[in-house]
Image (cartoon, rainbow, N blue to C red; front, side, top):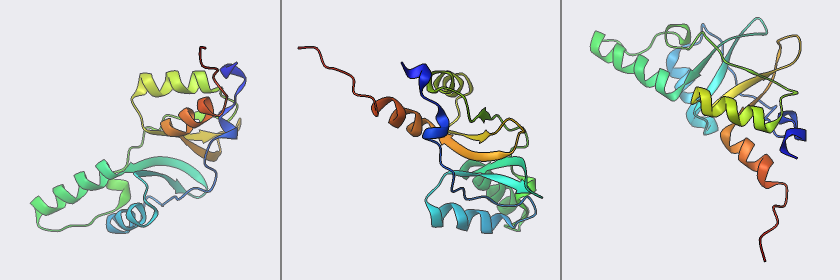
Length: 136
């Protein structure tokens, strides 16, 4: 049953993104403002990375040790981006989350264009949306 549920029905499509040349502190501001823990990095309409709270903290600590806090998103972002296709079922998505240990993954279409993002919580919502009968 769960293999028939597609992540496209549960993914977030109104994404908060940032460019790789953005200031690191503006990335921090965006994460705080929107209450998110990470976001896709986009340049010229293409997905080029992901930046997370962890990446930002790492960059800030590095800057603190060097005497100047700041820098660019490109200096701290993850450039290797694991993605899921929008036609992926929730079982395969759950297996991917378990294998990779990620909290969120960008979702792309057949052409590789970013169309959304899915989180572990979204997968749980998808599973929970189907009534699971209790034993009498």
